[in-house]
Image (cartoon, rainbow, N blue to C red; front, top):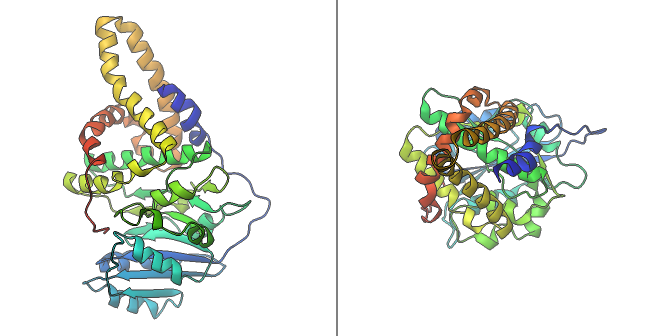
Length: 354
């Protein structure tokens, strides 16, 4: 069952080559950034967005969502040298709309251009051509572009585990999109058309949930024909990873709280892979002990080779090359990951989207 996933789904991304386009059109782009009490992040990262090397027109709509820190003054300071920065100040909480959805909706409503490129205040583009590369995916009727939101490489075990989990998530949503079953994107690096947002009434179908402004919206509106992926290294965004297990667990609780609202077919395919992966190691031990150890280990070795080929090619695409030689151990860790985070699927997250 796992070989089916690696050969049918994940190999599509591992051997993916960016399609060549005979012509490329530059679109006017509205970059949307929402922030709550993130003055330092805005000061550190927003200039990198504002100074993109993009020949066509673009604006940066920065929505300050009821911040109590100096976010307002940071945006006022940056708007003087950068005329393409448009700060929006929200001074009242939205009733009955939880999380990030209201400030993001306001930013989209106030944006000037049809093409929307979303990121977070704690994210920094990998290069000066981030906007250029993300908008270049919008051709032949495409309405959605899925990007990669990476984390900075830091010393320590936790950093490697966070980046491996982020890699696995990206491998899945990129591969499913290439297989004609797009099911999610990440708000750290995501683009779609404004008309698509309003045609589907924005986030109205899940306004009652704190999360889902990225994955649930994409799960609802993405199709096999309207979705593209962007995996150019300069098109990545980078964020600071969590530095404690408690912070990371809290973050994953918030993320996984929305997955139970995915379409049934997506829950089936994602759940089947997780179940097959979780059962593999216990059944491997049982087979080795009670049946034939060398046959069990041969099967394990064959799976490890296929997995290694897919992982190594995919990790190189996503600039996670330092994890390649650790993948056997990280795959075992994934089994414990299922145990540690299984109950987060049933927890109700807090309302604070920050």
